[in-house]
Image (cartoon, rainbow, N blue to C red):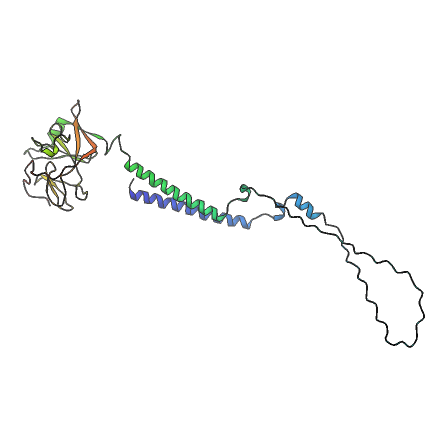
Length: 293
């Protein structure tokens, strides 16, 4: 999985959760406009307590009228009127209203979640999924491919068939490229230099060179005229067995550990790369003709 694929996956996940958040906001606003009558949500006990005072008449208290002031000057005393028994004062009738506040706990399922909680959870889930995808991508990249492909043991074919394809009619070397192994199979020299001895880079007179230039990783093509490998990126040159000749490359071309099975098959161990320094003296002649770069 490439970096571009990971970025596209992350953008897609963020877009999906953004759409989900917008839908949730619109849904909450719609449900707020169509909210049911609040009286239907009141507890029956509270409704009965509120209706218990209906039908009760509350009379206002009787206030005595002030008596008129006696006249300052009278010309004649009025005749006394017969005394009448005073009516007893009527006590005001009232109703005492006692307010009782009831606290009813609502479960989290009934209360739901707030908008802040929703966005916090959505943001956390988005970053969690993005991190999980990124971690799986790194795991897939670094996990060794033991069942096939680069990083596993590649069967390049029968040794006799390979040797027959490594030279043309004029006797010039024509490396055999194995795409699955990302390697060039070339004939090994009759006598290996000391830096290759005991490192299992040669089997049945064959060697497998990694196609990547050791300078900056460009693929190094074969130049038939010079009988060597020449990097078009920065001009590094190697002879037919990958020994350094010129350019900014710091060492020889890398090569793989190889072996020949009992059935005479040439096996390339692409999981084991062997690095060697620049050879003090080339094992084969180079160049043998005009350069390609």
